[in-house]
Image (cartoon, rainbow, N blue to C red; front, side, top):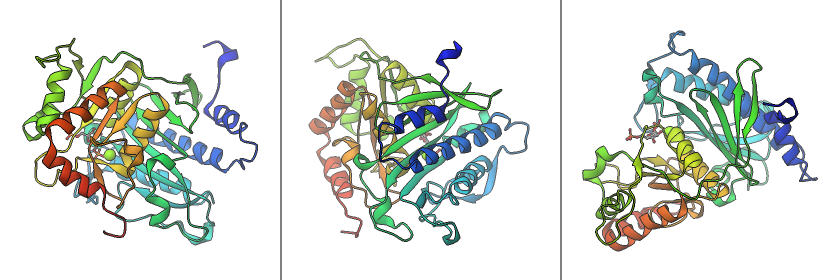
Length: 356
Ligand code: AHM
Ligand code: MG
């Protein structure tokens, strides 16, 4: 990389913030803190096989899933680097049942941080890439500890979101509403350097990504959509897309963002899964926000995920994300074939936070 072109993540965030003369710098600092947490998590994940940190911990999370030791480590790193900064009024993590309160001695700020500390962690033991997902809202209550009202905001209101991918290299990808930008960690320097400015999803999609092992549980609409992607719809034959599925959301999303395609994790008929597996607040909102700012689109099968007003912290949602034409095609298949499911999921989606 020519020296003149080197931009650190810190410099990039600062330059972006300069476009807003009223910005106080708090938000810039918050993104630095996340980048620092990412470096610490990267350090552990890349030497996980050496450091006696692989494997399951004693705990389970809200979903009854056994936590990996690295889940717990990543969660603690993000919490401890952010709780004392006076930039947040609340945090929420996929690994915690309730809101994480900010200890009062630290003072409170105006932002809310939501995160999935280590997504895809069931892949760690076999050396498959995992990621951290984060999303930032501005508080809506005037003061004091943040409340559910501050956290349960529609994705449309996010002020920033991003992910870190711990793969063959470590990358941080984020958007604060002015494009999506990717930074690669130079391990020798310990700095994230701008490597992928202004990411846009390519117009032509290459891949579709879904866990087809679940196909027998899918609705007719989702099955029809899949046949269409494979070019097997007799009414509309097309060149088939290649299938690629890692089972690590950040990695699947990242590949399709850079190379074009659609990732979907639909609802299915298994016990407890009529609303899908992905978590609206910790996974789907951030991905939908990034998709929007990269010229792509994310739907829950009914409409734009960014418009869904959340009713609970651990709310599930189906996800279809990628090239807009493909995602809209999924919606069309669902509209045409899945009336019963639309009714059930529509009612869940329309619940209010007050329990209505
Ligand atoms: P996690 O948050 O418990 O790690 O689960 C999320 C992961 C995603 O990364 C991935 O897209 C999906 O679950 C894989 O699910 P499945 O194994 O059912 O295909
Ligand atoms: Mg997750």
